[in-house]
Image (tube, rainbow, N blue to C red; front, side, top):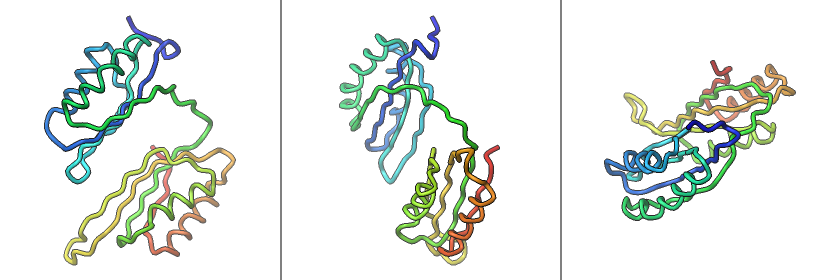
Length: 180
């Protein structure tokens, strides 16, 4: 039986633990065994740790069964987990943009960029950062990829100009482009 989004319950699972094979398989197996669907997920390895954010959907009864399964599964896999019931995101009129930044690595870059968008009342939907050694010189570089949603009341040309001026002042190479 397929649930409508109105009838479905949603559970967000956050887990972190030492990276080893089988974690994704066991989490997916727990969802399937409890007749829940994984509707969204993000997984990555940070240092020696594996981290996952996952949203599952199902009937109230099936989500409850999944919630009851997580503590034992967490202990068995050596994970620290948090679960939280949620609702589907209520979409508001907005325009999606992708932000990319490359610069010499310095502390505070993420804060500066997040603060810029926060003061403009622009939501950051996704953010991924990393560092790498520049070819030939080995200089530590910083990269950022971000998805933002811009309210329709914001003038895009002004936002782009202000953001690029802001980045020039911090010596950041950046782009702000509509998401395709």
